Amino acid sequence: MASAFQWFQNWRTGRADAAALDRCGDADLARIAGDIGLNVRELTALARKGPHAADLLYDRLASLGLDANVIGRSMPAVAQDLQRVCAFCESKGRCKHDLDGSFVPWPEYCPNAPSLGELVLDKAANARRDAG
Image (cartoon, rainbow, N blue to C red; front, side, top):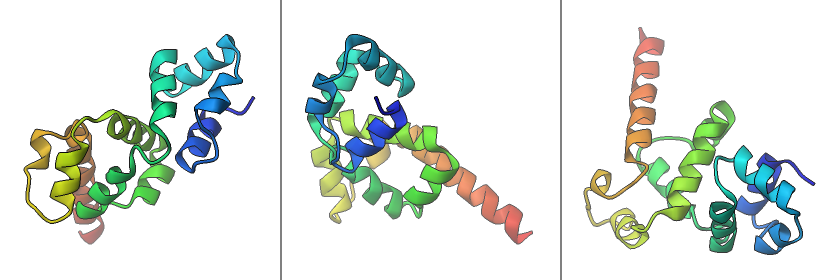
């Protein structure tokens, strides 16, 4: 059985789905879920949402001047949590509308707003440190 991280990466890229989880035993399901901070029910729900459930996250990161690849490499647990939260978000319509050009105060509805705000502040602090 692949590691939980590998399953999550495969799921994100469309190479694993709910059927892959159906082939796992209870112990493997519990291990995978625990490794990515979910319970088995949440893991199954996440898998059923499909690999594009967190696609709006990448647009939001770009709109904030944040690089998803840098975050993924330097803070994989943070990146994974952002993806999980986005996948389960129920405000996708508002988010898409906002990202399509209509200003919607996204911090009011985005469950990732606190984490994204911290990332923006960290980026600004690093830029100030590097400049000075």
